[in-house]
Image (tube, rainbow, N blue to C red; front, side, top):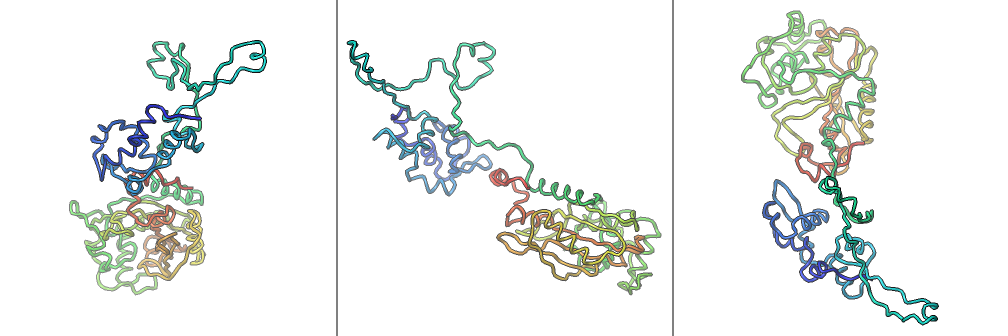
Length: 435
């Protein structure tokens, strides 16, 4: 049997503090105002635990759950009424009410036994007795108690493992950062080496070395961020420049007719914010030549896209190249499927694509749990017009640029790419660690 404490009676009459807080907030209040509310810490703690309020930018708002419950009786409200009327309620609610000291147990003193009555001891009436805390009992060991030595004369309250406790959110890595690091570790595990390149790149490495024509639409102001100060950079050695120029104008020794026209050296010196990590691949191929190798990079790129649920102006890309003889398009598709499956995405499909620097080319799609198929894998085999000027004469090169942000969307189950950089604490806390 149980009965209400004075605090329990007060809450039965006026409502639980967390319910009173909802009415006080109405639509929203500042944290400073909420702090002045009576029993603010208790009310706020339970309201957050019940997901009745949302705290953002020092503003406290009612959640949809909070709005729906504000004029309704909760299970705890009903439990207080049941304790008042019949002294009992559901076991799980009793534990919560006891932990909040809103009820106390009523213990009965046993009647004297047979021999006590036989030898004439006075019959005692059964009286209810409330279980009281032992005098001097403490629940928390404080620095003050330790320094003074008073803890030696105190008894400690028993720890109730079934009592509700505030939810603790331990520190963890931001989900997208953790996803990128996980991909990096998996690629290293597959035998790839990491390659690096500058974020500010010359148009030569960003476009010309990749056999992108100088009048290609991708080089317009709508697809590149051009640097203003400084606006020009240094080109590599003249021998490489001459080979790239000859390839663009007439195909050089690649059995191609090139793009025709006159290749402009001045145009190649313009500085841009790197628009794709394929520029890093070009630099790496120039240094590596025909040596068999596997490289990758995960880094940022910049394009003046319209920001929406699937596009950002600054985004991460996962670039990979495999250098070796007798490599085929079949090998490329196998690599792409293996990478997708490595991050837990089993459903992958491909369709033919076009890129100025690869032939054949392919676009890959992965299945998002709610959005459906999203394009995230762009790949192909580097053309001779790109490879020969860079000194790759015998090998084939498989290449891909993965929209790693879209892969993360599918893996994390989000529908808006902007969520990857969100400051929403609730989302950051609830998003599980990537497995």
